[in-house]
Image (tube, rainbow, N blue to C red; front, side, top):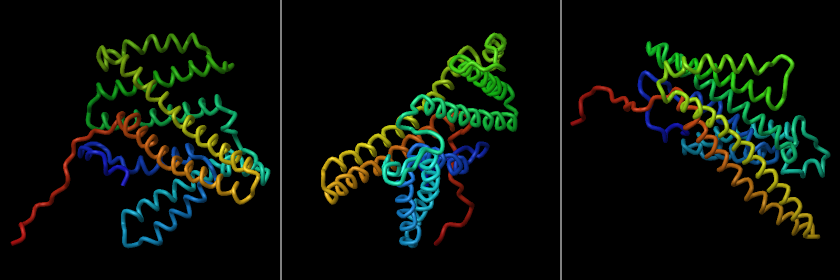
Length: 285
């Protein structure tokens, strides 16, 4: 369902569906990251799967939503979010890992690490494809890009969080040695392609930004509900705002996470331009 909007891949390329199936729910849950919202999405998913059995597209959407809801609940527990800060106020919930509303810089670092891993996996898949098709020069370019991105990541880590086992001088010397090899493999525009890869990784910060806006809007909903001074009216106000936030929390992660796949990830290995399989046969009549 999610890859159907893409042009068909070439026969010699990869089917993008398994990659979407593996990474899309993970990044979706990481972005929404609220156990309360995840529970509501799980209920909606069950309704779609078991209530619309005659509608295959709705059943498929329900299955996708159910997996995304599970990841959303898990990350909600890690972030300590249950309808924003309502869980901490009423039930004394605490983050098992990070409080997204306050730990902005750690979340940026985390999403950059996720983006680095995702892009590097794409390069490895592309390297395997080039090697299988005997495109050794293109494979060498992807291999060198992979190594350089790892080295640049280590340099950034040493810059912001110095580590005893890291030394920037050997890393810089290695980068200086590998850059001419990268140009030899990828041409004069190879450094620009490397910068494009770095930009792809930075683009994953949108996961943090969307998640932060979602949790802050949930907190605002709880605050406004409490300011009404009336239990019924407060629940109504908070529910309306949470409903709006949940609607945004479904569509915004879907659009942006798919964009991360289509642009940042698939561009490293996916080759489009395939044709539908049309078996030979006699025309009826």
